[in-house]
Amino acid sequence: MTDILKPRDEQDVSEAVARALAEEKTLEIVGHGSKRAIGRAAQTDMTLDLSKLSGIELYEPEELILSAKAGTPIAEIEKALARNEQELAFEPMDCAPLLGGKPGRGTLGGMIAVNLSGPRRVKAGAMRDFALGFQAVSGRGEQFKAGGRVVKNVTGYDLPKFVAGSWGTLAVVTQATIKVLPRSEAVETVLVLGLDDTRAVEAMSAAMGSSCEVSGAAHLPQEIAQQLSIIPVAAAGRSVTALRLEGIPVSIAYRKDKLQKLLAPFGELGKLGPRDSRSFWRAMRDATPFADETQNPVWRVSTSPSEAPRVAAAIRTSTKAEIFFDWAGGLLWVRMPGKAAEEWSVRSALAGRGHALLIRADPAVRASAQVFEPLEPGLAAISKRLKESFDPKGVLNPGRMYAGI
Image (cartoon, one colour):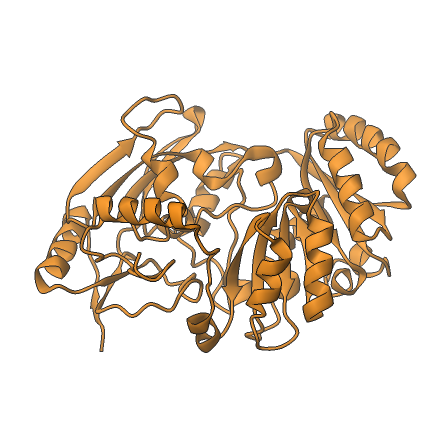
């Protein structure tokens, strides 16, 4: 049985890594394990459970900053922010609906490790853009800090950008400071009905390029739209292209009128009120249309919006997969009809114009597939050197992303 280590503070984490080094063992880094089923199924000797490193340490609403320990649940952070009408603007995904876990189990450390970013990324930016600083323990067992507690700081290298999205392979984050933003007073969504993929991307691109300040743009083909429990979307009987507007009511009313005039040539228009809008964009954030309690593979494919219709068509032709669009076409969620990952079809459709991550699949499929986008030799060499700089003995999450790294 794998040993489970539950550190109470950063010193305990440092000692746990030092122990692993001394015993020549490897560590799996987890918070509450909500994303454990994503990535390569690497074999480790011990588990470093950070769930006891929990709690908000600093929250200054007037300064728009929050610091918390790595094991702090995102749900707890969002609850504290809501009391001050603030939010995590990058909308971190709750992986539970898609992976069949318990909702609200994601942690701050896990959010940073995978760079979780939702539909508002097209306007607000990614999670890594909101990471101001952190404390961590390297694979050498050394405690270190990076960044700071202000938006404009010049403290050393911008290591938060390296660590965000490293899947725990570079360092064990023990505490982090992030920037938060005021929550919008109101939200509404303009719908365009019956568009095919190409026309939908054109409509979303027009909306994003306008002065309407669209904060979310998604497209659902008819068969996927009908699966949602949001009545105006499910009852449309056609594909649905959705554009979100947020802000104060008077501003939304003005921008909605402009947006509707811009989109009128594309097709019949509809709308979602505040309640349905929040439900719809939560479903987009969490990939709820594919939360089917199966292990059918689900891919998260990033590409340029202009390439999205071609990529989607190529994947559908060879696999009969279901696909919906987020990030104005920059993100494709792909669900395969069977148990096979169909990796060759996905990667050949991309043809180097993007990258694909296998988010869900059963362990056997994950073990035989390249879960993350394969690295070119030059980039693989840089990644390996970076790993060796932080974790020369390969103690932390070895092989989680790539074999040998």
